[in-house]
Image 1: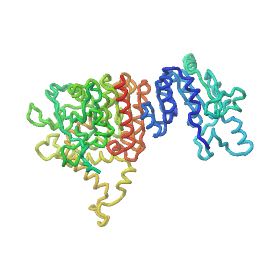
Image 2: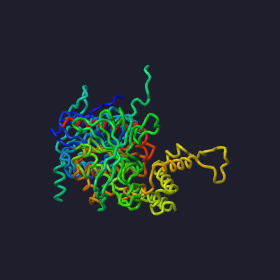
Image 3: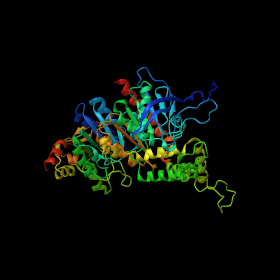
Image 4: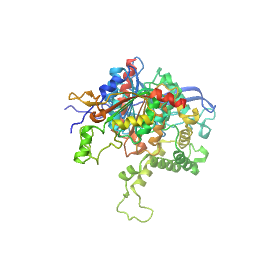
Amino acid sequence: MKVIEHIAYDLIIDAVPVGAKVLDLGCGNGDLLERLMFQKAAHTYGVEISSAGVSRCVERGLYCYQGDIDEGLADYRDNSFDVVILNQTLQIVKRPAYVLCEMMRISRIAVVSFPNFGYMKTRLQLLIRGTMPKNDLLPYEWYETPNIHLLTIRDFRNFCAANRFPIKSEKHFRIGPDATSRPVQCLPNLLAQYGFFILDGATYTSSLKKM
Amino acid sequence: MPDVDQHAHQIIARTSFFTIDNFTFRNGRRLPQVTIAYETYGRLNADRTNAVLIAHALSGSAHAAGVYGPNDERPGWWDLYIGPGKPFDTERYFVICSNVLGGCSGTTGPSSINPETGRPYGLDFPMVTIHDMVRAQRLLIEQLGIKRLLCIAGGSMGGMQALKWAILYPDMVQSVIAIATSASLSAQGIALNEVGRQAIMNDPNWNNGDYYGGKGPDAGLSLARMIGHITYMSEQHMHERFGRRFKDEELSPNGLKQTFMIESYLHHQGMKFVDRFDANSYLYITKAIDYFDLKKDYGTLHAAFEKVSSNFLVISFTSDWLYPSSQSKEIVQSLRANGKNVMYADIETDFGHDTFLLDCEPLKRIIANFLKREYERVCAS
C-alpha cells in the first residue's frame, strides 16, 4: 500500500495569503508549515502529538506545541490567526465538534480536508466485499486504524449547516497520477477521494457576538 | 591513530566574583555589599550577541561546566550539556552561570560574614526571592558588557528564574529555555519542601540558624536532601535502578541492620550534600521557590506574559511528578494566548524531574536545535 504524502498541500498553499499567521493542527514534521514559511512568508505555528514530529519542527525553527489538538485552543483569542489548518486530521481527533468550533473562533479562515468516506471505491468495498474499506485513502485494518470519526463530504456540509459555519468554498479532489490534487466537480460525495472546505471563521465569530 | 587525550576538550573552569554595592532586596532590606560568584565558558563575540545565561536549580552552583584542574574528577553540574560540541556549544556561545543570591557556593548568603557584626548572617540574612536572584544576575550581565542575552536557560528553579527574566527584562532576552519548571510550585511541592525544612529546624544543632563555627544541623540537612532525592525520581526509575535489592545480600533480612539499595543510595546522597551545602541556604532557597507565584504577582498567568518578547522553548518530562507536564503546559498556553512564539516538548522518560541533569539525548537535541535557530535569527537581524 503506497502512502500518499503531502495531500492537499497545493490547495492549502493557494488558500493562504502572503504574510498570514497560520496554525497547523497536527503539523507532523512541519513540512507544510515550512513550505508556507518559504512560499507565503507565513508566520507559522503548529500542534503535533508525536515527539519525533516536534523534534523535527524544532530543528526547522518552527514553533510547535507537543500535545493533543484539543488541548488549550480555548486560550487563543478570537481571530488571532489568519488561517487554521486541519489537514487529514479531522477523522483522528477525539472531539471534532469542539475542535471545529474553536478553529472557527480563533481564525479568520479555517481550512479542513479529510478522506471522503463516501468515495465510490470505499462504498463498494463495504457493499460488495462486506469488509471495512482499506485503500489508498484509508490504509489501515479496522483494528489498527487511528481514524475514529470517519465522515463523508455530505456529513461535513450537514455539520456546517447545523453549527452555522459559513462555507466560503469547497474544492473536493482526487489525487492525480502526478500526486497533485485534481478537482472533482461532478458528484463529489461519490467521486472525490478527499473533501476540502474553506470556512469563514471571521463571519462566524462576529455572528456569535451578535447573539 | 593519534593519542586522543580524553580531557583535551574538557573546559578548565575558574570561578570569578562580582561585587554589587547597596543591593536592596524586594522586601526592602538593603545589604551594603553582595558578592556574586560566576563562571564563564567560551568567548563573547564582537557583537556581544552570543551570551547564554544558565540559571541553576536548588542545589546548583556557578560551577556548571568543566573541571578545576587535570586531577578534578567532578565536572560542573551541567557539564553534559555545556562545552565544545555540546548543546550549549562553547565554541559558538559565551556561557555564563552564577550562583544564586542566598546560596552558599561563593555568592553572598546566610553563611556569609555580615560586615556589621563580623559574624555570619544566619537568619539575619534578608529573605530572598527569585526576583532578587534575577536582579542580581542582571547586574552581573550588564557588568560583563552584555546588553541582550541570546538565551536564558534553566531547569526547575532555574526555569523559574528564566521566566522571571523574560518578564522583568523583555528587551534583554532573545530566547528562554524553561525546563521542568512551573509558574508556581504545587501544594504538594511546598509540602515536601516544608518537610525538608522541618528536618533541618528540628535538628538541635540548627540552633535557630546560629551554628556556624560549631557542629551544624548535618542530620537535618541530610534528611532534607534525602526527601528531595525521592521527589526528583519517578517510581519507575527507582524501581528499575534499585528495586527491592539489598545492599548486602548475605545479611539476613530481619532486624534493622539490613539495608535496601534505595536506603543506602539516599543515605549516601544525604551525607554527600552536607559537605557542600549550607542548611540555612537550603531554608532560604526552598522558601524562595515556594513563594514564587507568577499568577499571584501579576493577577493571572496571561497577564504575567503579556509584555514578554522572547521566543520560548518549554520542556517537561512525562514522569516528572514534582513539576508535572501540566504545569509546563499552563505556561505554554498562556504564552500562546498572548501570541508569543513558543515551542513545547513533553519528553517521554522514566527518569522523573532529574532528567534534565542526566544524559538525555532528545533534550540535548532540542536544546541544540532551538539555540542554533535563535542564534541564526539574531545574526540575521
